[in-house]
Length: 212
View: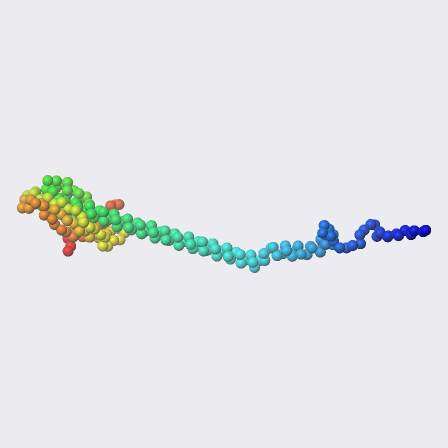
């Protein structure tokens, strides 16, 4: 009985003729060469064009301009707020000084006239200081003769006009008055207008008049 032996021929060099790539197969040099143009195209897309760079630059400049404009607005607003606060403080200081001067002017005692009159002069300037100083001796004589005592208090005060270094203040003042003919205190009601001037860091009264 004769058996035949089948002979399978293999490709020369033992190389597989199947060109299909399996799951773990690595691409050959040809595959790498074929991928190179795609990689180059991706690199070209990553680099912005000159037109795009100019657009970004304009956007950056616009943002910088907006930020600077916002800072300017904030600065102007802050200065406005500070100025308003400064003006409010100036008015408050003028009213406080006017109150003190009105109380001094309506609070005179014949027994302490020199001291009381000095308080009026200390809070006055200009015409008011000059006129009060000129009439002070005659006023002292009359008060001493009549044993006059006045004690004033400010009920209300408000600025009716003001600028950076002057203010006009209207005050409502009550004063209890006693003298030889009226030993029991008599209430007097006054509406006083004081013109105030800011001088050397202080508010001083330059003119006083009775109104209403």
